[in-house]
Amino acid sequence: MNLVTFIIDIVFIFLVMIGLYTIAFNVISWCTKPNINGEIKEKSFIDLKSFLLLDGTDMIKYSKEFNCVNISKELIFKLSENGFISCPSVVYYVNSTGFESGHMLVTVKTKDKGLVYVEPQDDSTTMNLSEWYNYTSYRNCFE
Image 1 (cartoon, rainbow, N blue to C red):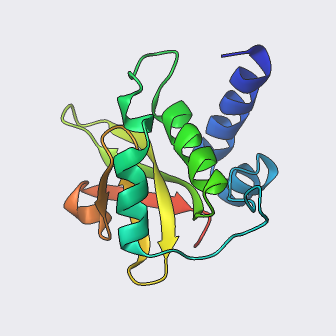
Image 2 (cartoon, rainbow, N blue to C red):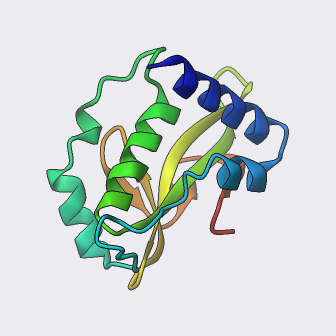
């Protein structure tokens, strides 16, 4: 990771932590942009699952240097290149030790299932975050 990417990640995390979600998601501009052909549209859930099957983002090894923020960003860029509408989601929940924790995943807008949450570390998907987390709050750039 280069210094510029590191600084952008730190600024993003700071903005999210202090509640400036709109600024974090728009200024850092992780939300999807048109792909190389200028196409951007809602694709189907099947399109998303097919893409995730072939995409290798879930094979990236999690580490302190390459964490959920970096892995989510990588998947968002790849989704964007393939014409999907996506953005990061931050979930806050109380962990097993009783402290509030946060985790970043990816939200994809589909034409048939609406918003689909993707865990980029294993390609699992859900339309209902409470299936995965007993969360206290969450935020994504679609809401």
